[in-house]
Image 1 (tube, rainbow, N blue to C red):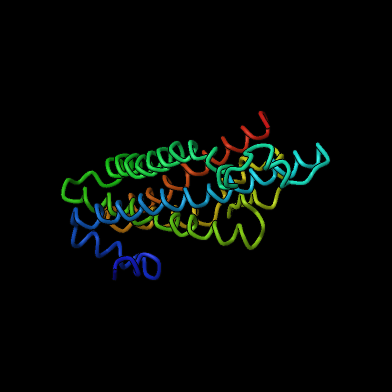
Image 2: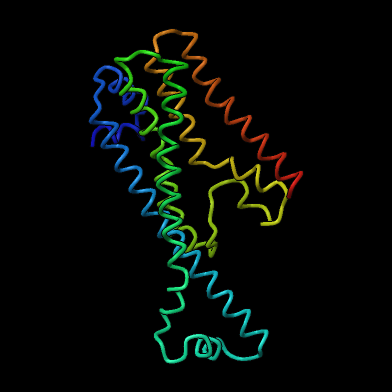
Length: 231
C-alpha cells in the first residue's frame, strides 16, 4: 500500500525503492490489479454508453412514428420485461472484455520489452523495468474510474478527458487531440521518470524522456494527419 500511495504522491521515491529492491512480486500483483480494474471499469463505462445509445434509438423511433416510447418498447418486446431490451447488447460485452484485457496486457508487455532493452538491458533489473511500466499506468485506471461519474454529471456518455471532448464529434481534429489526455500524459511522465530513475547512465536518463515523449509525439502527429486526411 505504501508503494501505491507513493506512485501518486512521491513517484521518484517509489521508483528508487523499486530499483533498490527489485522483486517479481510487486509487478505481478500490480499487473493483476491494473488489468482487472481496467477490464471491470471498461465494462461499466460501456454499459452506460449502451444504455444511452438504446434510449436514443427508442426516442428516435418514437419521434419518427409519432408514438410514445412506451409504445415502441411494447412493439419490440411485447409483454416481456423491459430489461430484455438491453439483453440485445450483451453480446458486445464479450468483445469489450476481450479487447480491454488484450490491450491492457499488450500495453504492459510491449513498453516493457522495448524500454528495458533500449534503456536498461540489465538482467537484475528486469523486474524493476516491468514494475515501472505497470505502476506508471495506474493513472489510466484512475481515468477509467472517473469516466463513469463524470459522464453522468456532464451528461456525456462518451466521456473522455482529452482535448477532443471540447470539439464536435465530427471534427477532423478530434482524432489527433484525443491523444492529449490528462491521464495518458500523466502515465507518460511516470514512465519517463521511472526509467530515468532506474538507469545509471546520465545520457540514458535524458534518453528515457526523449524516447517516451518522442514516440508519443510521433503518434500524435500520425493521429492528427489521419483525422485531417480521412476524417
